[in-house]
Image (cartoon, rainbow, N blue to C red; front, side, top):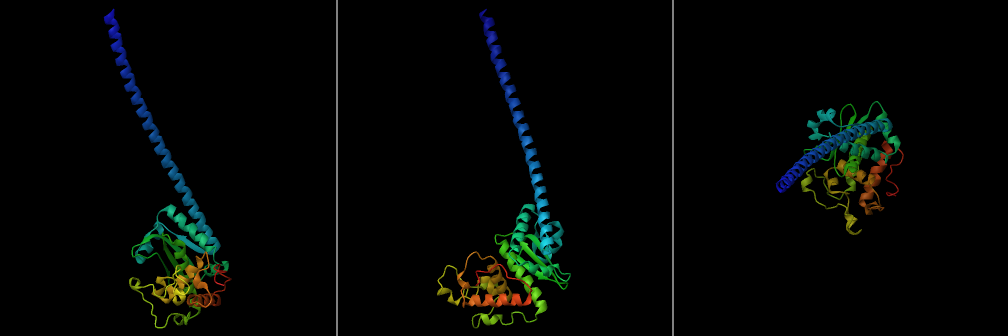
Amino acid sequence: MQRRAVRRGKLSVFTYFLIFVVMVGVTALTIKELDIHSGIEEVLYQKDTSSSVIAENKYYINKIKNEYGITIGYGESEKNFMTSINANVQEDEYVANNNIKSIYEALKKYPNDVFDIFKQEKYSLYVVLVSNFTDNNLALASKNTLNQYRIFLSNNENFERAFHHEFFHVLEYYMQDKVKYLYHSWNSYNPTGFEYQADVSVLSNEYVYNKYATEEENANAYFVTKYSKVSPKEDRAEIFANLMMLNKKEGYLKGGSNIKNKIDYLINEIYENISVSNFHFSPYIN
């Protein structure tokens, strides 16, 4: 009788071991199945989110076209432009979403009547979103013989400011169609003997406004950024972009300053050659 009791004990231990092995196997399969379902749900969620972003992008593109007469493009359909501008096309729907909405908000800063330019049959503006330029550019603007204006914008931390900079180039293209000697006195607002320098690598901070300097130290400032010293048109576009991004009254806006004199000249030419109401950079400039 003692032997039978021992045998039943050995069988019980073995049985418990088998049960344990089976339970471990079942648990592992269950966890694996949960992981598979979780992965499927994640993929489905990403697909649904992507679809909603694409739909929102189309919504804002149509909204910008209807309200401002401006066309926005990105993705595969814009690849033909990329070789000529040394850039890679923007294909990320999420990045494009941020860029498009940033442009929409930036356009609200302009007087509505400025966009009448692009609602004419003669002129058009096409904004192309790119991932990056291969030659260290952030953005650029162009005009062809058919009066088709294009702005190419890369995804960068100063995206809105870059848009305003390039948009001023477009406004200047338009004004130059009407006035041959636009800003003909511009160089007289610069330091005596100053010459613009196209080579960015040799530019210095001489004559450049420094927001951390004292008023006395900035008395000899003529340019809002170092890049302003590249050419007259870049000088004006940098001033314009700064004005469109103002969130406080900078020292260079003080009446009688060298930069303020340039600002007054720039704005006066805009109002004389484009039939628009006030831009939204006032009251800071007054």
